[in-house]
Length: 239
Image (cartoon, rainbow, N blue to C red; front, side, top):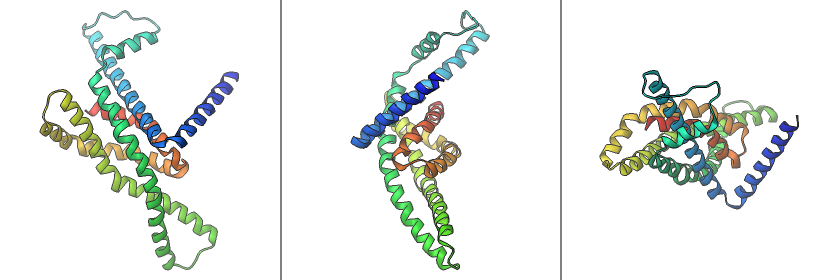
């Protein structure tokens, strides 16, 4: 019980510290947080790929492994370090810090204002088409409509071009690092864009609905970063 209480207190302290830096320098805080999340996703993807190759190598005699009932943490860390690709780390760290964090910082603030304006227009139109409802019913209806409008704008108008920007960013960085051509990077983006976009919509649509419904605007990027760990693992595996 004491461990749970201590963990809870530490979590509250961490959240309080995040709130303080978020108020003083929101853009830098979100950029750094997104950078760390992107790097973490790349590390997990590196570990998963290395573990898969190691298991296959052990099965077919490619590795001489000593197995035991417990695999040490040091062994997992060594596995990641041995397979770490600094070019990919720089690419995904830059993706989070230079693109994802700053873009979402400004986008969520603008989306909040835009969704309010669109909701007001739609609600006025809908009210003109029906008999006036009691005030409490109208408030509930307006709240639900705002969430759906916000989700629709984000997923339909923002997500497709943003996924395209993510893919271009990653492909251009990796192609440049590996001495390839810009035309090759664009070709790779064209080949994977539709599948990547559909995967993004499947993952992010329910998550964004939860985000827009229950998460305060100032914490929208932070919540998105938790989900982004899984998205970055997927994106890293694709490129």
